[in-house]
Image (cartoon, rainbow, N blue to C red; front, side, top):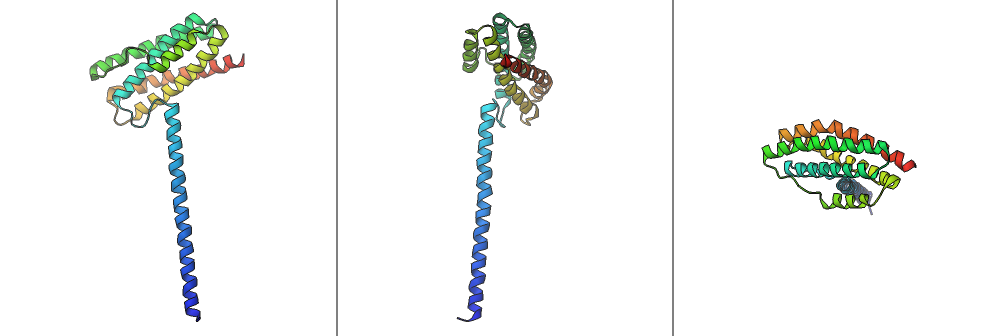
Length: 198
């Protein structure tokens, strides 16, 4: 065999190996990125009541459901707790969320959006669970629920305040309500840490 065919064969082998390596490299990151993206999306759907495709109607309905739950659970907390800090927090939940609910109802009427009038199944089940507890046991579960619920609420309102498809009134409502929700979230996590330590 002459040196030319051998050189050609070596060149072809090198090109084939490089192409195969490139194909493998190209396919791996894409697959990995897609898988990672799906994991992230799955996590977001679990942790937050909002996807990137939130609409004015879905935001208004979810915001109303969260607000109503905070009011009803706050009233329940004022009956069930013996801790003045938990009672003060619960009273603030009732006051702040009633004020936000009044604003949201006004916007919904202007924009012809339908808001839920009763608790959804998830919050109804939570209310039932909490109603069976008292004292320190209640405080732990209530604080835990408030921390988780406000994490979700902040994520919802942050997304709505930035969503290009949101109406100006709802976007302004979301942005204006966010600072209060973030305060609620911080206080809830502090309550949860304190109640869990006992």
